[in-house]
Length: 253
Image (cartoon, rainbow, N blue to C red):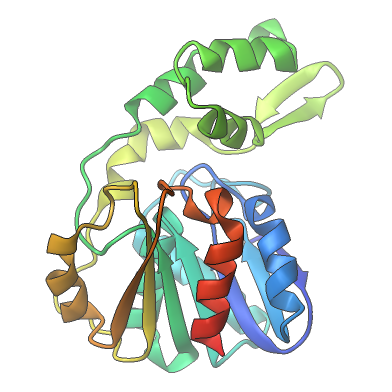
């Protein structure tokens, strides 16, 4: 069963993190949504955070994981929000189990195929040799040789934890990601449709969701609307959490 953090009482609201993320990334926003009368479930997907690790890793399996989680917690008529990889999971889940979903929110990702583009991040993570028992500062310095963006670096370092005294490790399953990185970019299968309210939010400085993508998005999500957060990149919910929160709440209410 997937690990989750649950906040509040009310209508179920699932939040699914992006690649290399975890439920902790959504803690502050999750608490804000909970204060509006939602029971917020922030999930760790397989091979991420505190959830189980598996050699199998693809969107169909992750959707099955979310479905099993909903059954275990007797959740129905849910709202679901996903960012990046989590957005792909949320889209596939809504099209596979439309009777379970009331509204869908997708943050800075579309249903199309994305070519692998995490090479620098994987190179940085693979450069860390935990067998020599590096300190946090040493891990940060190694990653910093590959990743110069401060926000991305801090995002990755959130995955560091003490496996035992003196021994750091990453929470995610890096070996499987090295092998299965192609799975992250897989497109939503043709012909799948979710014909309930759907909100896409993109970052104005991000190139993940282009104007030219809107027509193909609408084929899958005919009731979609698209909003843009200006001066924000792919981590739009972290760069402008206030506007992101406002857009989501006004859509859900």
